Length: 250
Image 1 (cartoon, one colour):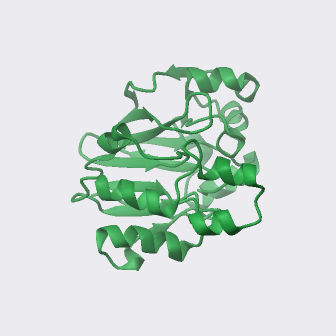
Image 2: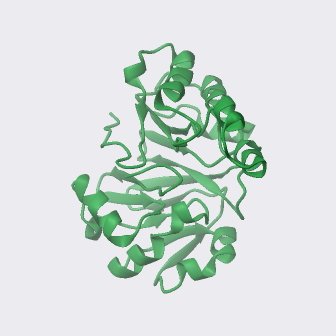
């Protein structure tokens, strides 16, 4: 639905279940973005949350309250920003290492290094196919690589090009935060994670959470294609304005 520092949300559908991951957009913007994908808010079965930064939770409570949606969130995220989740009728605290199910979708949370209270990312499964999502992490870990092995589709952060970041106009402290081990993945490190995975089942690869100032789609795609030895048009890019359109995993 949109990916970047101005707001994030992703839809996952399997069987009779439709789940949103994060919601960093205002209510009307979220409804418009859903409509673009042929979805109404009443069709949603709930929202799963990765962490408490505003570009990921800014619209969660408004959407959940308006349409009576349950929310799944880690203990650390909930208690770091309790006001951001106020008024939600059903909040489910999740263990960052324990899978859970929402309807027809099994959801596997896993912890990631990021400057938040208890950040997680997710793998979504329907019993046969696996969609992995990895954004908002400063570096890879052995556990991340283990969890993402064998996915049929992968949404992978390519936040910045390190040279563009370090030579750009961000204050030095922000450069350190973004490029540090608790910040965001650069193109090279994203490609390194991809290279470590068993990717023989991979049908879709989307570069996500690109910085407007410190990256370009061409640089991100080139880094990932270098690992897979694939044509550049095979790798998709999630934009801030439109995200990306539905992808079918077969």
